[in-house]
Length: 324
Image (cartoon, rainbow, N blue to C red; front, side, top):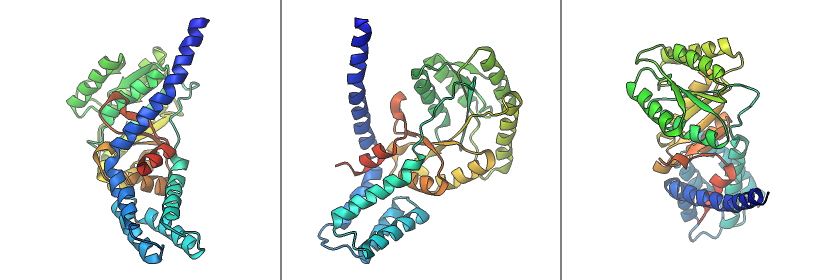
């Protein structure tokens, strides 16, 4: 009993420290976005004593250049202009505080962690996205995250177009003690995932993560293939896949929004993972995605380490953007 309490006490002490370490890492990793957005905005107010519509126009330019997008930016500026007319923005500090609050309000409805429903056995996660977005790497990191929650995970190597993708997934499986169901290059992707699902059921797997080949959102024939994969899965489990996780590359900015629209229309995206936030100044796209699509943002990727895939927390992200 004593050992249990001691172990629990240590865990409770370590958790805040772990959270603080991740926050500091998050702040460092999104430095380019922070510079492009909040630091540039802060420079607007140097030597400014009053807030006026001219300054708001300059702010609008900065927000668009930070990849918040025209629609999201105009909504923000419209609200700020209304507050200015009501004399609610008296100085630079008030404006920055208000802007920070507005940005957080945009993200909060989309800050929804992935919850594995234990009544679904297995819980099926279908991974989709374009080439180069980081799908396979994200799968490996996601498996580790789910294992830490006590889940038994299996991979379905549904990207049968690239031999390298299958080998990469097998490598992740070996590193994380995850079984991988795969077939030869060129095999039917839907058939691979169908076999994997049957195996997952037989082995009482908690979560099946199904990879798919990268495809451009404009390739209608390949988008139809995704629909076929969904139908195939539903032959075994009618309400699956339980999660269609779209992997988006933050470095492509506004094009990520177009991808999300097309994939959502084709296969009904239920969650988004935004990768490569550590290598771009275009992280402002996250606000555009949240504002215009209102899809749950499950995870963000901020590096190559196994724990650099983290559940998205809106307040932490905005705080990291504005932190000194």
